[in-house]
Image (cartoon, rainbow, N blue to C red):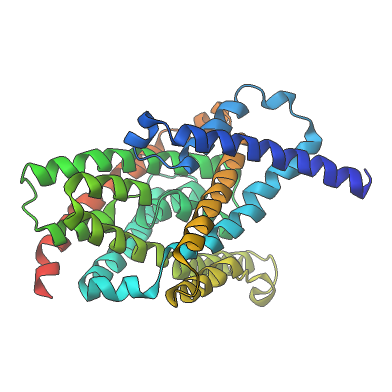
Length: 343
């Protein structure tokens, strides 16, 4: 195939995913979907999966590189631009207790998830992605980790499905626990509890708004600090994968180390955004564009995921996610109740 023909076919695949992403944005603005606080990214992967299990076989094979481009290159650009949602001032705003809680939650959830995955004899890629998604920020974290370990698209889709299910449950359960007085936490402590344990950013926003502004504000900030922790986690994952490849005889560790440059640029963007050099309207436009890019990436992953691949993954990923969900609620509550008041 000539280079011009290859580019044309690739463009067809990209335009197809862009069209589905536009539909995801439209559906995401409907009253029902907004009431569930589901982001366009989640709608996008659902649309992609519906396509994969219906009309996917009619897609010309020459379009597949365009879909792959969306799930790899566009994904990394989306992760980089995600930094415009954060500032280093967010870290100082909530103080040391929230940072400590976030650090403990992220570390124990990821390490515990990997260990439980081994005990369940799960696929290592799915176990790692589900653990990272539960521990940090749901789908966005899974996408970042997927770029570092390069697993098959269906494994990413399975991991995303687990965090969507339990993140949605948390969004409804937390307000009930707070409003009924069962947890007995102050608004600030409840915000730390919510932000440090609920999966998706959208779910934190939905749950926080249901409990009032005094809970929502600290919850969102604590959640965004968790998002920042994606950077060191990606470095550790990349280093671990490279070392494992070297030990396995794939070459020297130096030649196999994969530096997640998109994670470095993500941190650089956060630093730039901390200076507030751009008008708020421009930053908001960038965030909308970034959401669209991430929606394209999620849709592309969904387009490579069939029901047969979900069956292949089995029940264990959802069992792992359920165990991590219980851990997040119990550990997060105890730290919010007993650790936060000490500072």
